[in-house]
Amino acid sequence: MATAPPETAISVTGLRKSFGEHVVLDGLDLTVPAGTVYSLLGANGAGKSTTVRILSTLAASDGGSARVRGHDLASEPDAVRAAIGVTGQFSAVDSLLTGEENLLLMADLHHWPRRDGRRRVAELLRRFDLVDAARRPASTYSGGMRRRLDLAMTLVGDPQVIFLDEPTTGLDPRSRRAMWRIVRELVSTGVTVFLTTQYLEEADELADRIGVLHHGRLVAEGTAEELKRLVPGGHVLLRFADPTSLEDAERALDTSSRENGTLALRVPSDGGLRSLRAVLSRLDDRSIEVEELSVRTPDLDDVFLALTGQPGAEKVST
Amino acid sequence: MGTAPSLPGPAPAALRFHPLRDSATMSRRNLRHMLRYPSTTLVLVGMPIVFLLLFVYVFGGALGAGISEGPGGRSEYVTYVVPAILLMTIASTVQGTAISIAMDLTEGIIDRFRTMHIARVSVLTGHVVGSVIQAFLSLAIVMGVALLIGFRPGAGLGGWLATTGFLAVVTFALVWLSVALGQVSRSVETASNLPMPLILLPFLSSGFVPTDSMPAGLRWFAEYQPFTPIIETSRGLLMDQPVGHHGWVALGWCALIALGGYLWSRRLFGREHPS
Ligand SMILES: Nc1ncnc2c1ncn2[C@@H]1O[C@H](COP(=O)(O)OP(=O)(O)O)[C@@H](O)[C@H]1O
Ligand SMILES: [Mg+2]
Image (cartoon, rainbow over the protein chains, first blue to last red):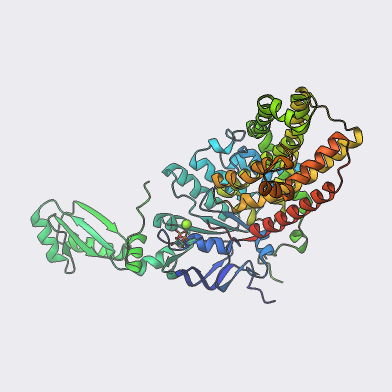
């Protein structure tokens, strides 16, 4: 049987899934190189969880094929399960057990020898800042602690490919940052992470590559930088102390436009140092004082808006 | 070959399943639940005890007079009703099984198990082993109460062993049925209601009053439903009396229920669960 090159962790071709009449995935194609973070970005209901459920063997697809670490999802689900770890959108911990017991349960199911299992569990508790809560039932955990325990349980088996479905949805900013740190650490150990999010900022922070899921397909894919280049809208905003400076500057810079009702000018720019220097030296030549300068590059919100015609989810508060 | 880090797939050995080991792990998990929350067991065992006391002390005098000509009354009725109460104890325990399966499903932990490389059936066998142990704990408690209030079985050691073995078979069958019922339930409430017939069926059997005291239609039902031969068999074994054809009929029903419950459970477990 032909297998994908080992450098590819996940490859998906023409994946389709419908619920009755409702087409959720309409020919999804994507490839995730091993050791990278791929972020599937989409609004609520776009089909992110459906994709994760199919790729993690929880649900069957209606068409297309997918391989995880070279193993075909349909014909070798056992090999896929042995290679992956999944933290779903909704918590999958045993709330009647303590955090430590949950982790030991995972160690037993992975057939770790008793001592190794205990050592590993202790290490995960430390790493996920759960030592103090280790002996408390998981039902008493906060949302952030539950999420961390959930992910720690996923890591007990040393998975090579990890699926994280909206790992920070509903978390407070501090827990969200803690989760981001954990994901970054994971990637530094060489595992592949496939994460879904509604938060543009999160994809920007964590992902090597981002796929934008809309109407069952990827409408754009690339690095955050590449996606940002897809949409125009980068500019420099110059603010002046008085109308005279504003008018002088307007004369000096031929492509600028006024910001309505303020003493500010908007100058198209790619945000690069060279174009910025050109603008500033023109103003300098004419001794025009700039009171305030800000550079605005398009962010993923702009990308999302341009690609899907809808605004992304609310920005992450930081 | 080059020095690029290779990413070997898991060795075939890593793909071997360990159903016994995984079942033991899952059973430990369910026993831990039970020990951590003993109130669950107490509630489950409370119901049959309440019925036992109710039937013996409230109705026992009148019913006892009805089942025998002698002056025995209440004390004779204790002996008559205990097998039905034992069955009710098992039914009550498996109602707990259905609830804990449904809770697992709503918790999402079963989805985690499904994405792991473990022997799938172990998730279910863990519940089965846990419930069988819980049922025996409950049966011991109920039997203790029954002995306290005057139950005097005639069985010798052999009879007790046979009773224990027989009740184990019954428990095993009803637990598998309940594992399926817990899975078809979409909610914990449904899961606690679906096994209700198991609690009620003993009333429509020879458990509380002899079937020949019932009107024709009901009597026909009572004689042919599985709980009558099951109760008659336990009664015979406990009282050291011949069980006759009831024993085989009861075992046949148990085999049927166990197999049906097992196959149904496996099928349900293989099914896709909507998130
Ligand atoms: N089991 C299901 N049955 C019917 N519809 C479903 C089911 N699961 C998901 N859907 C529908 O599929 C669409 C995509 O869902 P989902 O993958 O959960 O989206 P996301 O995770 O991106 O928010 C939604 O419209 C949802 O209602
Ligand atoms: Mg989702």
